[in-house]
Structure formats: C-alpha cells, structure tokens
Image (cartoon, rainbow, N blue to C red; front, side):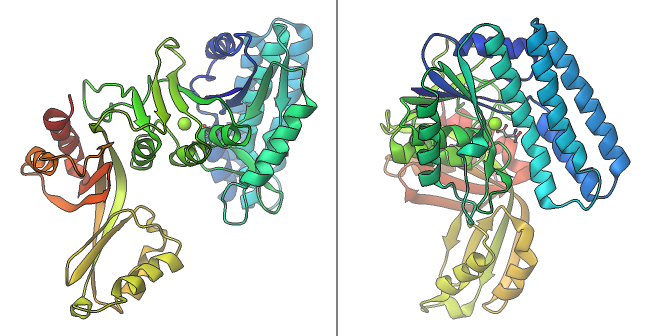
Length: 437
Ligand code: ASP
Ligand code: MG
C-alpha cells in the first residue's frame, strides 16, 4: 500500500480537493494523510496568540471569520443534503472546541488543541467528499495511533502497533484518510509534530505499515537544484539518496519537513515528491541508491548565529571541545556547523533561545564572539568531498564573497559554507552559474 500526503495548498480550495480526489481514487487501496487547508494553521496560530495575550475580542473576531469561511466551503463542496448536514456538524463541533478556549485560563495545551482542528476539519471534509461520490473511504483518527514520547520523538513502536490494528479493523475500505501533524504526547494530551509536520506523519506511517512508497504531494515538481525563490531557472532534481535529501531538507529546502527522511531511510521506503497541479510528472524520488555522481543541489538556511570561542587554553589541550559541547547540550541547543583552529572554535546554531545563558557559560573558557544574521549554504551531491578539483571549483564560484565558515569533508555528500544573509542571493547565484548545469 502507498501513503500519499497532500499539503495545505493541495487541499486549499474546493477545486483542489476535487483534484486530490481524482488522484486518490484510482482503485488502488491507499492511505491518505492531509494537512489543514492552506492558511488555516496560520490563522489558528493567530487565534492562539490573541488568547495567550488575553485579547479575547480579537480572537473571537478571527474565529468567527474562519468559521464562516468553512461554512461557505461546505456549501460549495457537496451536493448531498445528508453529507452537507454531516459536514456542518463536524465543523461546528471543531469550532465549539476552539471557542471553549476563549474563556478561562489559556494554556499551551489550549494552543495545541486549537492547532489540531485544522487537520481534523480538512480530513473530515475530504472523507465526506469521497463518501458522497460513492467511494469506500474511512477516516482514521491520527490521535488513535500517532504518538510522541517525553523527548518529543516519535514513538515508532506505538505507532506501528496501533495503525496496523486500525487497518486490520477496517479491511473493507479502499481509502484510509487521516490527519497529518497532530498526535498525542506522553501525557496523552493533544500535541503536534511542529509546523510542516504532516510530511513527517506520512513517513512515520509509511515506515509503520511498510508502505511500498510514501508520496509527498505539494505545489512544486520536486526538489530543485537551487532555491526557486532566490535564483531563476532552477531545475528539478530527478533522484536523491536519503542522505542527500536529508541534508537539503534540513538546510533550508522548504519542500520537505527535515525529519521526514529518517523513518523512511530506516525502513528503506522510497519517498517521492509530486506536484498536485502536474500529476503526470515523476517528481523527485528519494531512495537508498545514490545515483549519479557529482553536485546535485544547493539549499540555504537563514537565521543562523555563529559563535566563536577563542582561548589560549585550547592549545595542545584535550577535553576543551567536550567542555564547550556540553554547554550546548545542557541547553538542548543543536550545533550545525563546526570549524576549529588551534586557538579557536566556531560553531553555528539556529535556535538562539538560550544564547545569552550559553554565552555566559562559554565565557569561562575564553573570549566569545557572535555573528548574527548568517546563512548556511549547503551544497549537496554524491561523493563530492572526494571529487577531484571540486573544492577549487567551489572556492572559484565563491569569488570575493566573504565566507565566515566552511565545512568540507564531514560527509561524502555535503559542503557547507556560512555567509552573511545579505550575501545569500549572490552566493546561490554564483554556485548555480559555476557548478550546476
Ligand atoms: N498544518 C500544519 C502546518 O501548517 C502542518 C502541515 O501542513 O504540515 O504547519
Ligand atoms: Mg509542508
């Protein structure tokens, strides 16, 4: 069985939902994971923000606007009176849940409940559309099988046990519809897999049911060899290895949630990126084979802070790096890039939440310097660190662009450079001009 995930734009209007129905209903049994309709999660975040700031009037205003939009959608989407009735009841129920948080104390749990309603609505509306058209469609609640543990990692054992049980209990359905993004946490409260997490839902399910393929349907043909928002004439990449795709997703290619690749890689399940608006295109296939050699793509990740620790005590000493890394570990702050010299070490982080506290602790080991508004440019390909002359070509391409850090040889498929965000566009363009065809 295949798992197909459709993003917010793919289910963002009545017309698009019908296109998705066409794609899904090809007679092959499948499991469909849906995002909230586009714009909904952002609006739900806005509502939760108002409530957190005790601005109840604004929250109520936005809630009622969104609710009206959904009633309009229902009127446009269905022709069967019975289905319209059912859809109204579901949407009303979801909005009652949202409204219940406009009185009393507002907690984080309230926010998570509110955010969950977007996927609950879209999956129900889509399921009803299929039922109206006579298809054998069943809704599976992600809250019955999707779970994270106290570290916020997916509980793969629980997921597998429960999703397989649900499928066995509903053998006659052709299409199983479920929500992306939402889950239960270790306290059995509603939680989520972070923004964009529906892709991750799909690969967790794919791994759990040993799917033949996981397909992520969006509004672009697949991974491009450069950032289409920054550089013109980017090209689609036909195939990537799991590791290459993971680097690109982690380092800024917005098309795929970065955590998506790992469950698929571990279970060796191919992931295909497809375009809902251009369904015959093969998209990008991500699988274990590394495919062709050489450079494949470049991606950029903004919002990076570089931290440099300079100390005479590092000279010829051991344990220095361990002490430094322990500070980041204590503050649960992941490090992306590292470069060292005999007297200094530079690292990058993308989560500055605990930066002040980290710097305080680091000062015990030496002078600390920060560079904010940095961008990691991640160049990805196969065997790139062993390709002859490639390093020279990369340096050539960078020309006079000031490079703050460079990481080369850490793996066979990645060269990363850190530049100031204001130089991002010209760096991406230079790499396209010199290195990508
Ligand atoms: N609806 C959620 C979001 O917008 C999850 C997703 O679409 O993947 O972040
Ligand atoms: Mg997405």
